[in-house]
Length: 290
Image (tube, rainbow, N blue to C red; front, side, top):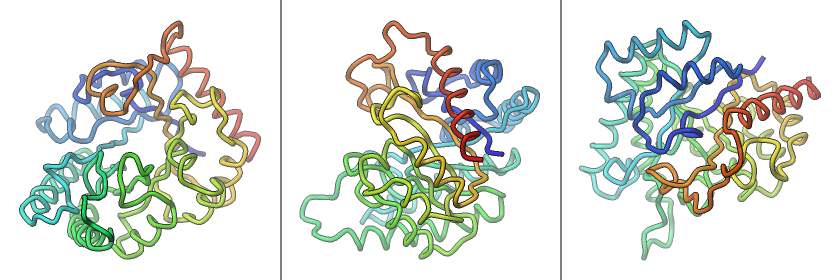
């Protein structure tokens, strides 16, 4: 059975936050998993990380982690020093998460976020090759620490290296580590893929993590996503990993700025009630496709 989770930033306006209140909130709402910011966890000391993990376990929750690398940590950069800095940062994240039992780290780990193809670059293959070499290096630390790196496929407006499931499959195979997989997100699939179900099926056993959200970044159930097609595809490949919803509704703060939330979708809505309803929507959806 898939663990069903939610990203803390659905409620938060800044990437760094006290995650403990979200542990209690998410457990009370009935979720199985809370996803938090990987960089914030890496910045904690060992005692703080252990306390976070113990709190989650006491509420029956699994933790997962997500991040988009800033340009100063761009592991696809043409600048060798920047790549080295990014590799060291990813290894710091891996070490921190490995210290509390390992788990899934997803997001734009393979380059900067957000990022457009540099002006004057006619072909992204050199950047891809640099990125693959960086992730190959980082993969050794992940293997030693029980950490799975799930590389998120995102739309063309946020990154240029991995925009489709097919591109990510080729990339992950080139890295060649059992601890490097790909991550799909329904919001991005809706923008880039010809057929969402086919993209999920193509990923198959390489799919390590799955994010859900509507075409408008609302919680599942508030848009026009082909949810039955999505659930059927996940069932077809016998996907057993976590399904974590990642809606963004609020303007303001670092989160609203970086996710480009320019109109407040939360007005007149109870965020907790919406999350609970989306969780039930997801459970009902998966039950139809057992």
